[in-house]
Length: 102
Image (cartoon, helix red, strand yellow):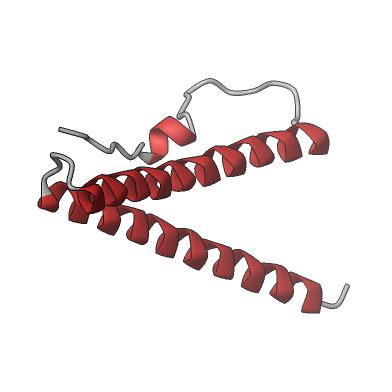
């Protein structure tokens, strides 16, 4: 049985109770944000690839449960839709910030 696991938020953004004494530089913040974004997009891509692999196996007549294929397909679809909604909200927030007068 193929299990597709999706990480929870705490695995992508580790929660720590320690207080950082030195301020975070813009470069560090950008690098951290970029790495989190890259990891998230890679997870979405993995779900899409897993769905494609299972669909191809089903089409070739290999021993794959139909319900597992449908679950993988729906998970991939939902993660892609969620990613697109997050992207839309980020773009909307960016546009709102750009409209602000300084």
